[in-house]
Image (cartoon, rainbow, N blue to C red; front, side, top):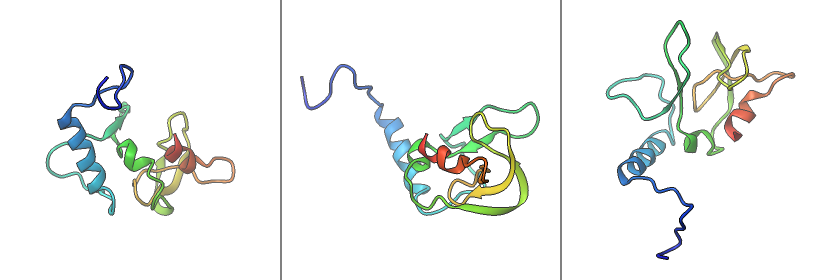
Length: 114
């Protein structure tokens, strides 16, 4: 065996690794609301029958536990937590996705832990 890799460890191609690191570093200190240029490598949650696709940041940015604060939005939106169908006015300050932040549901915490 060479190094600390085992047969069970999944290998990530170098180009995919570089893309993932670059996108995480770009999202480290800012929220990107505009989509310009080439399509990103971010995860896209299932497309609805109507409307545009939903942007969800890459997992390392989503789970880094820094600067994810609920903000009050002027417009309403559907909660992006898988399995939740709430319509809310709160967004994550870093991810810019609508998430429930109510007494009954706290999807903002679950979304960033899962």
